Image (cartoon, rainbow, N blue to C red; front, top):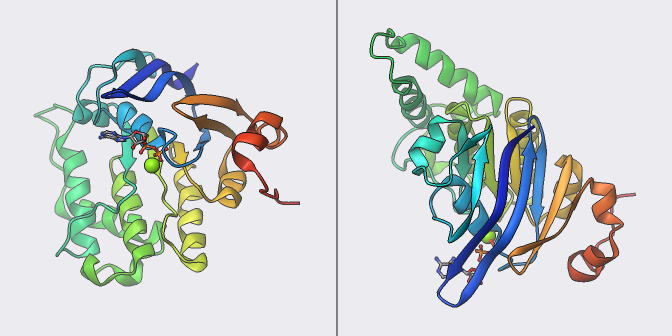
Length: 250
Ligand code: ADP
Ligand code: MG
């Protein structure tokens, strides 16, 4: 069974059909890449899945539960995490403070009032582990404002992982990064994929073909194809509509 099951989802903005009767599934343990030209509706789809936007039709199921009408925070508690195309972290705070805030958020959830609150030491240790998981141990005490763009992106990924998501929605994590920082973030996505399923929206085709188990191609609000990287790469419609002159890795 799929972890995420999107069935016939539709979203209009006025007269524009941003997403139209789209079906998509993400399997447990999978990195599923979503590619397509600008304006195809990828970010809209991510917002529909995370609950930031409400669909005009269709359903979204997470692990066998219909989440179509649930608010974002309930989806988060069910294991749905996301990052945005624009980096989203707490400014004026250190890496450590950012991580502690995210971890406290998780430890408060669950509704079990009688469960002992995790100790301060425990949370600090977990924050340190997360930082080193993403290669940020040397930046632990720095304010996030002085970090590079790529490092802030890593913090954002760490914050998302702090929520222990079962499925993480990543919207263009490599956008605006130089080659070296992109490599660090790619490695981070690979590490995240050991802990969670990932729906990865990304323009960097090398990264997509390196990271994804399956790829879905979205054009004008609908899916053109879904399949393994090999299937998608050799699909004539996809080549014509999107990949164009893209030369796959040897
Ligand atoms: P992508 O992420 O694939 O580039 P988007 O999901 O951002 O595409 O956008 C899909 C289409 O919906 C575009 O034509 C965009 O201009 C439009 N759109 C996105 N968000 C809104 C919004 N909040 N209001 C009106 N139109 C929107
Ligand atoms: Mg987008």
